Length: 593
Image 1 (spheres, rainbow, N blue to C red):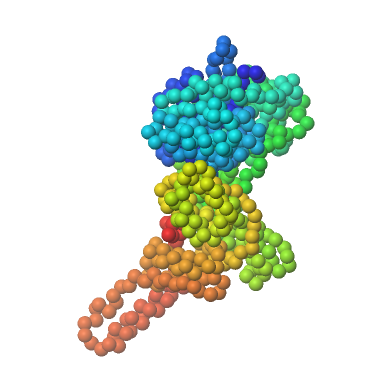
Image 2: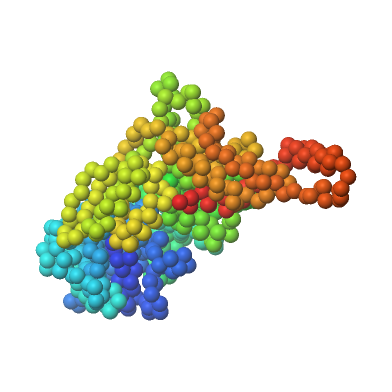
């Protein structure tokens, strides 16, 4: 155990975590690097150049005549995947805090650092990309010293591209990160920090052994669910899974026990022996709180059960996804899914398509609200169609977040305007160093859900970084905006929005739907309504056949007769005709601006 080190790499997006991990793997001769970002093995990660999943890998390193085992976990940097980071941190004793020499400390750097400090991790600060012409290592060093109060000599300067400083990092990991603590003779306690589904082997659980030893063939049980299994195979994680006879205290590895049902494995659970169980579970990490909710429906209603199975398998690999069944008049049966943000929602949709061949429709995303009725009862509502009657509602409270934005001082004006337009309140602003400012805002979560992050990036030319956490619920004047097609409400398009935005949003939605809904043999009225009041209307004109073309001359009554006949037919058609809302319409509502 003295020779084991468990550590993760934490940083803001694009600060070079995965590239640095490649250099560490190369230096310890763990694998042959054939292309960049070897640990990002998902197609989506390669295409977008972002890390979506944490990846654990074991390296062997020799120094001073001793051989050490280093378990590295590479983590994502985007705020939508912060739950992956919190789980990785729970399985480590130390962390490399990577800061880009050209960009300095950013919002997600600070957020991930606080998470690591809460878990009492040993922090090793690393300045990456020092080979870049625009690097400012001295200024960034000042920022790191201000942030964590370390000595300048503790900061390692490195480059993930050239491999400079990699040896110093490995030496620092061995010398500064403590070995795992635990008792090899105590009852088995292993923390599940991730899991994945393999169609041949069942569910593979990744865990860190806190106390005791687990051997191949042991009878084990999951503490919280109480399910019992046999450990058919245990092993360590290199680029592939390498079977070993046992996993001892402090080691990170995997267990395969032929589990087929996804519901039986919960990330954060504790594995223990059936014969000599531990007294209590390991204090796991916090439960995930979804921020954004959207309905996910199969395009073909017969695929409902397949969608459920796909979501369960995806949930194994992405523990921050939550879902429960719901039904909609317009779309049939589907699931109400909770996501950590819009990027997370987009990635889940992509993964359903690529990994499970599921074609789905996603409804307009919204957040959860607290609705208080006239009798003082509170109810949490995730879906606008779940709102009680307007006459029953006393008031509605919406979630507010505390946002931290770090930006260049030149962009303060436009960023403040953006936040104030979104009904935000400025709490304070402080200069971090030189020309960089940290702004703190209180913002309604519902306002930042759809396009806030994209706008922030574009007005600050990509400089501003953004991080947030839920603060509280506050009373708010919200209105439910319904979209009606020929007088029929389309529940999948209804949204909850602030009264001040409702009319403009209704108008925009009507205009957008007019472009997207194909013309029929009858007029289609598209209306936006708040309660019984219609606030906007557009009409998709009917496709008409020229029935009077065959009349050449003669009395006008002949033409009238033909037109009246056509009018009756159209009226009958309108009563039985139904309007199909194309998939594009649901997506277009997100991109209204």
